[in-house]
Length: 186
Image 1 (tube, rainbow, N blue to C red):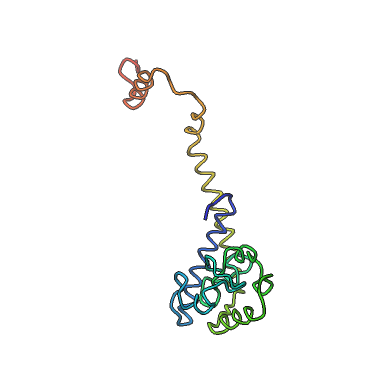
Image 2: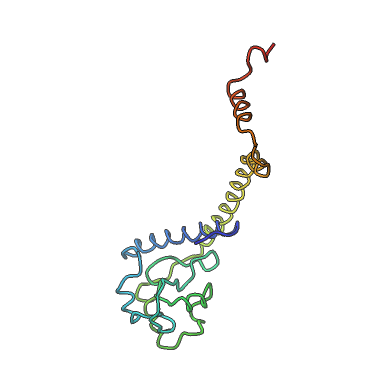
């Protein structure tokens, strides 16, 4: 996942947190950790997209999005196979309103969610997620500011052309490293 702006970092931190929280949620429910898309889950949905039935390349799609608004978890009962177009159409929206979802597929997803008892109480978790987002945003901006301040001398020199006589700068550097000579201190 490429990062393109300041907000991408705290969003990624929240996503990583919700993935880990999902693992803990699965452990608490006595379920194995959800790794890559298991064949049992693919088979459950006929090796096709849970939303439209297309058998194109499938990705793991979170029924309840794992973001700071929906606070979905990366856990059993919240991950279904989906084709890329359905995954993009759904994005961060509620799964029930997916435009390509028909009655039988809606029932299949609801049965899957119920079977795995996916119903986390995210009320308190939402507070943690918001604070985590805020802290990650503040820290990201502080780290970028630190990097800019620390590299200011190096960035300032980026626009100057390289010296034509490389011997002279080397001698000047050697003098700086060696310190003042006796004749220079008199």
